Image 1 (cartoon, rainbow, N blue to C red):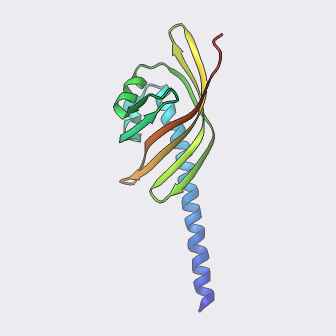
Image 2: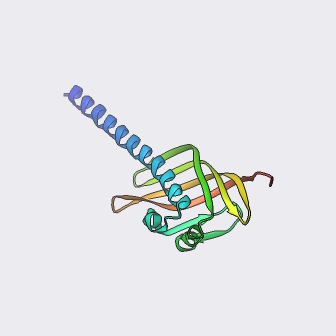
Length: 145
Protein backbone atom coordinates (compact mmCIF):
# COMPACT_ATOMS: atom_id res chain seq x y z
CA UNK A 1 0.00 0.00 0.00
CA UNK A 2 2.84 2.41 0.81
CA UNK A 3 4.69 1.75 -2.46
CA UNK A 4 1.82 2.91 -4.76
CA UNK A 5 1.44 6.09 -2.69
CA UNK A 6 5.17 6.75 -2.93
CA UNK A 7 5.11 6.23 -6.70
CA UNK A 8 2.10 8.55 -7.02
CA UNK A 9 3.88 11.20 -4.95
CA UNK A 10 7.05 10.94 -7.07
CA UNK A 11 5.08 11.22 -10.32
CA UNK A 12 3.10 14.23 -9.09
CA UNK A 13 6.31 15.88 -7.86
CA UNK A 14 7.97 15.38 -11.26
CA UNK A 15 4.92 16.76 -13.09
CA UNK A 16 5.04 19.77 -10.78
CA UNK A 17 8.71 20.30 -11.57
CA UNK A 18 8.06 20.09 -15.31
CA UNK A 19 5.18 22.54 -15.00
CA UNK A 20 7.42 24.94 -13.05
CA UNK A 21 10.21 24.61 -15.61
CA UNK A 22 7.76 25.35 -18.41
CA UNK A 23 6.55 28.48 -16.63
CA UNK A 24 10.15 29.53 -15.88
CA UNK A 25 11.18 29.13 -19.53
CA UNK A 26 8.05 30.94 -20.66
CA UNK A 27 8.70 33.84 -18.28
CA UNK A 28 12.31 34.22 -19.42
CA UNK A 29 11.04 34.39 -23.00
CA UNK A 30 8.17 36.75 -22.09
CA UNK A 31 10.57 39.01 -20.21
CA UNK A 32 12.66 39.49 -23.37
CA UNK A 33 9.56 39.68 -25.59
CA UNK A 34 8.29 42.64 -23.58
CA UNK A 35 11.54 44.54 -24.06
CA UNK A 36 11.64 43.62 -27.76
CA UNK A 37 8.22 45.29 -27.95
CA UNK A 38 9.65 48.35 -26.17
CA UNK A 39 12.43 48.58 -28.78
CA UNK A 40 9.90 48.15 -31.60
CA UNK A 41 7.77 50.89 -30.01
CA UNK A 42 4.83 48.43 -30.01
CA UNK A 43 2.81 49.88 -27.14
CA UNK A 44 -0.40 48.17 -28.31
CA UNK A 45 1.30 44.77 -28.42
CA UNK A 46 2.82 45.00 -24.95
CA UNK A 47 0.21 46.99 -23.02
CA UNK A 48 -1.61 43.92 -21.70
CA UNK A 49 1.68 42.30 -20.66
CA UNK A 50 1.92 45.00 -17.98
CA UNK A 51 -0.72 44.84 -15.25
CA UNK A 52 -2.99 47.85 -14.81
CA UNK A 53 -1.35 48.36 -11.37
CA UNK A 54 2.22 48.02 -12.74
CA UNK A 55 4.90 50.05 -10.94
CA UNK A 56 8.26 50.88 -12.55
CA UNK A 57 10.99 51.98 -10.12
CA UNK A 58 13.88 53.33 -12.19
CA UNK A 59 17.51 53.39 -11.09
CA UNK A 60 17.25 57.19 -11.04
CA UNK A 61 14.60 57.01 -8.33
CA UNK A 62 11.76 57.92 -10.68
CA UNK A 63 8.63 55.83 -10.13
CA UNK A 64 5.89 55.55 -12.70
CA UNK A 65 2.87 53.44 -13.59
CA UNK A 66 1.92 51.56 -16.71
CA UNK A 67 0.43 54.46 -18.66
CA UNK A 68 3.36 56.77 -17.94
CA UNK A 69 5.87 54.07 -18.89
CA UNK A 70 4.02 53.32 -22.13
CA UNK A 71 4.09 57.03 -23.02
CA UNK A 72 7.89 56.87 -22.60
CA UNK A 73 8.01 53.79 -24.82
CA UNK A 74 5.88 55.55 -27.45
CA UNK A 75 8.66 58.11 -27.95
CA UNK A 76 10.62 55.37 -29.71
CA UNK A 77 14.02 56.19 -28.26
CA UNK A 78 15.15 52.65 -27.33
CA UNK A 79 17.56 50.91 -29.71
CA UNK A 80 18.39 47.85 -27.59
CA UNK A 81 17.07 46.20 -24.42
CA UNK A 82 18.80 42.82 -24.07
CA UNK A 83 18.48 40.55 -21.03
CA UNK A 84 21.22 38.38 -19.56
CA UNK A 85 21.62 36.10 -16.52
CA UNK A 86 17.86 35.85 -15.96
CA UNK A 87 16.56 33.66 -13.13
CA UNK A 88 12.99 32.87 -12.16
CA UNK A 89 11.66 32.07 -8.72
CA UNK A 90 8.11 30.69 -8.88
CA UNK A 91 5.49 31.02 -6.13
CA UNK A 92 2.08 29.73 -7.23
CA UNK A 93 0.64 32.64 -9.28
CA UNK A 94 3.61 34.95 -8.64
CA UNK A 95 7.09 34.92 -10.14
CA UNK A 96 10.17 36.89 -9.14
CA UNK A 97 12.49 37.45 -12.09
CA UNK A 98 16.03 38.75 -11.62
CA UNK A 99 18.52 39.66 -14.29
CA UNK A 100 20.74 42.11 -16.10
CA UNK A 101 19.52 44.40 -18.86
CA UNK A 102 21.77 46.10 -21.42
CA UNK A 103 20.17 49.24 -22.83
CA UNK A 104 20.96 51.55 -25.71
CA UNK A 105 18.81 54.65 -25.96
CA UNK A 106 18.80 57.57 -28.39
CA UNK A 107 19.51 60.86 -26.67
CA UNK A 108 19.52 63.61 -29.26
CA UNK A 109 22.44 63.00 -31.61
CA UNK A 110 24.13 60.47 -29.35
CA UNK A 111 23.36 57.05 -27.90
CA UNK A 112 23.34 56.41 -24.16
CA UNK A 113 24.61 52.96 -23.24
CA UNK A 114 23.99 51.51 -19.83
CA UNK A 115 23.21 48.31 -18.06
CA UNK A 116 21.19 47.61 -14.99
CA UNK A 117 20.33 44.85 -12.59
CA UNK A 118 16.68 44.44 -11.77
CA UNK A 119 13.99 42.51 -10.00
CA UNK A 120 10.71 42.08 -11.82
CA UNK A 121 7.57 40.58 -10.38
CA UNK A 122 4.98 38.84 -12.54
CA UNK A 123 1.50 37.74 -11.47
CA UNK A 124 -0.62 35.16 -13.23
CA UNK A 125 -4.03 36.78 -13.63
CA UNK A 126 -6.84 35.15 -15.59
CA UNK A 127 -4.37 32.55 -16.95
CA UNK A 128 -1.99 35.24 -18.28
CA UNK A 129 1.34 36.32 -16.82
CA UNK A 130 1.60 40.10 -16.41
CA UNK A 131 4.45 42.19 -15.07
CA UNK A 132 3.33 44.00 -11.91
CA UNK A 133 6.66 45.51 -10.86
CA UNK A 134 10.10 46.41 -12.16
CA UNK A 135 12.72 47.57 -9.67
CA UNK A 136 16.20 48.64 -10.80
CA UNK A 137 18.65 48.18 -7.92
CA UNK A 138 21.91 48.88 -9.79
CA UNK A 139 22.64 50.96 -12.87
CA UNK A 140 25.89 51.71 -14.68
CA UNK A 141 26.22 54.22 -17.53
CA UNK A 142 29.12 53.95 -19.96
CA UNK A 143 31.05 57.20 -20.31
CA UNK A 144 29.97 59.27 -23.32
CA UNK A 145 32.16 58.84 -26.39
